[in-house]
Amino acid sequence: MCGVRSEMMSRLKLVLAVFVALAVVFSVGASIAGGKKKKGPPAWQKRSEAALATLEQPFQKKVAAVLVRLRKKGWEPVVISGRRSIEQQRKIVAAGRSGTMKSRHLCGRAADVMDRRHGWKGPAANPNFKFWTDLGVAARAEGLEWGGDWKRVKDVPHIQSPLGCGQKGPAKKKPAKKKKAAPKKKPAPAKRSIKR
Image 1: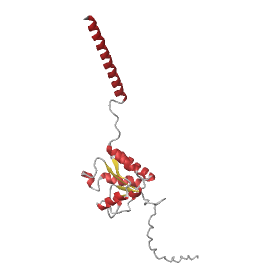
Image 2: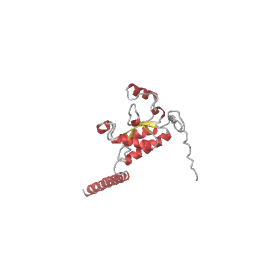
Image 3: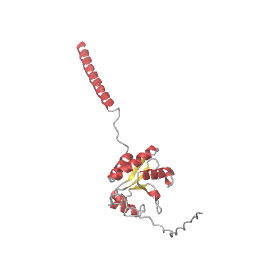
């Protein structure tokens, strides 16, 4: 009986040693990984980064600078639309969300930006919402055009390069209207002084 008990104790010690070894391995592995599986960025951030990556390089840098300016003001801006295919633009026009097939989205020189916490709901449904006006200020500071400044149709989430698709170098500006010159006045005759 003594031999059986000794053998059982040996096996129990072996099982216990294996269990302790596995526990050590798992605890070391968990501490290396921080105790949790490493997560990537949230889905909304991945979508925003993907949309930003579709933009033409010089414009992309300016949009990234706009996002930084907005974050400094406490907003959580995301790019919801970047470069679009012709088919995507056709669908947007057909749905009445755009009025043109000459959008700068087609060449990666336009982006739509919103605050991820508000989207289009609540206070963001108002085109005078502070985020939209801050977006306009930030876009203009980077030399971009803001859709909220447009006269005909306000497009407050829209920012774009001043360069049209296919245009290189500085944007062509419309020549300023010349004012009609006032008729030139004849100079008054000089007063003569009489010396006495």
